[in-house]
Length: 92
Image: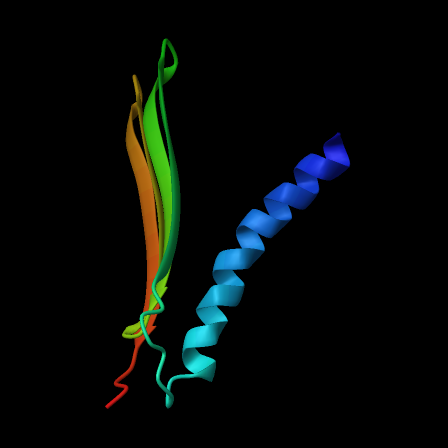
């Protein structure tokens, strides 16, 4: 069962990356209506604190992007981080 779970997780992470590579490879051609995105998030609230995090990736005829973040708050304060990246191009 662990092998199946790991394989599914690897595929879930690999598919958006593979779709994202289609954009730069075909940037000088007609991509038609290609538009793909993937995102996930989680929220936790309990006696230890409150937090949330998320990840998002997308690819379209205009470019690719990826972001991820988290925020955590407890009795010692608030912490968080954000990172993102992307590229855009003109097909004209």
